[in-house]
Image 1: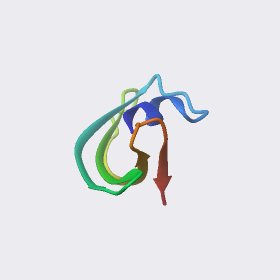
Image 2 (image 1 turned 180 degrees about the vertical axis):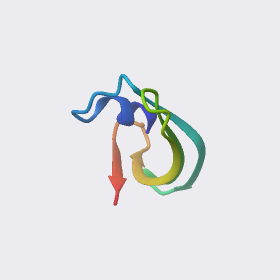
Image 3 (image 1 turned 30 degrees about the horizontal axis):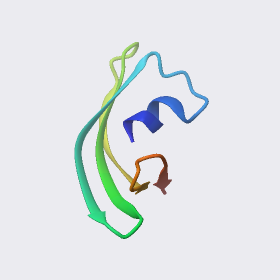
Image 4 (image 1 turned 120 degrees about the vertical axis):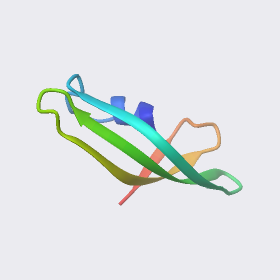
Length: 68
């Protein structure tokens, strides 16, 4: 998930830092149902928040599809 946050969108992340604090998951046959506790820190403003994200991650970790 951290790799996805850094690379798979068209936003400038040079001033934003992400940290995965905790992961809960359920293993299925072909994927993992995951829930991530993520800390986001905006360096320029000092803004800091913690939130939850959910995703379905493939067993080989090649794809992570975020759930809304």
